[in-house]
Image (tube, rainbow, N blue to C red; front, side):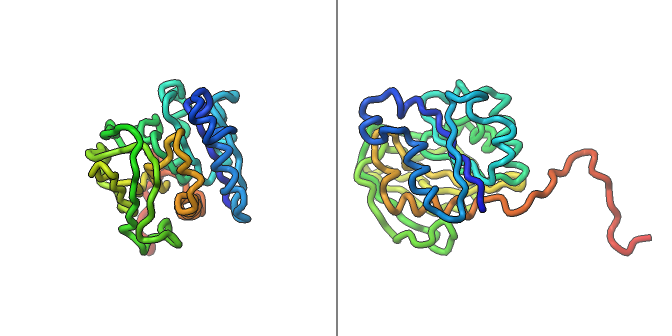
Length: 240
């Protein structure tokens, strides 16, 4: 079983009438609705309105993968909690930041850059699968459309990704690296751009397939201790 922790701020999707029409019970509930159907997933949802912002040490330690969606309340997450999430990822927990989570504290700490991008109002987006060999792209068509999505455009201020899996094109002519992977420590990271709170993006089958694939790909498979300055210097085998 893969322990999946879905964390959302439940702020921008809670107090916006247009968002409530699309996701009446919040984006975390929408993600849970399709992920919990997988027999291999054990899913828990959390929001910033819970004690310890929904991210207690015990809950973070339980997770094999953390899905993170945030938009208007990034600064409200305490640095201490963000650091605990980063530490878990470095030790092997998978991390899947969605949409505006490019501005989340854990993602920015892991990237080491400002993670800024261009954006404007909603537009039609076409997603191209440019790494069809990758596990995250399994079962995803070469091209599919998202009828309405907030436009994100380059330049996206991130380090060079390990791999670019999806490329987004908007009707206004903008391009964006919509699905990219990174490795930090023992953790795998997949950033996925679609998912604005007023757009029914998370109801699209292709988007759901990508997120499910990403959970399988990013999940912690084994725990390996992080090396630190106290790790002894071990001579090569056979050396006397």
